[in-house]
Length: 84
Image 1: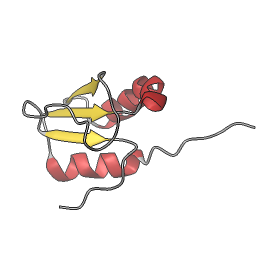
Image 2: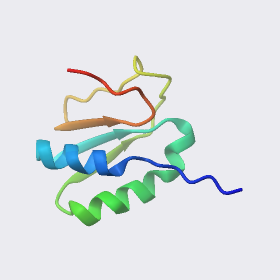
Image 3: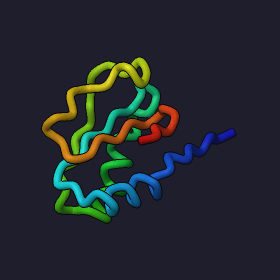
């Protein structure tokens, strides 16, 4: 059986279009880190001018977020949706 992941990249694309960032930081849980190249390829097709960085550090939950001060948009995969 092959498991197909739904990474909901359409939501990421919509959020990027909504915010029009120049820099994006993406945090993935360890199990999704092997998909970073696929995610970057898909996003670069849509937004070739945006600098996309993946956080390679730890990711133990919503309380374990990197310093996002130098980025216009922070996207964290694998967490519940945050409400603002």
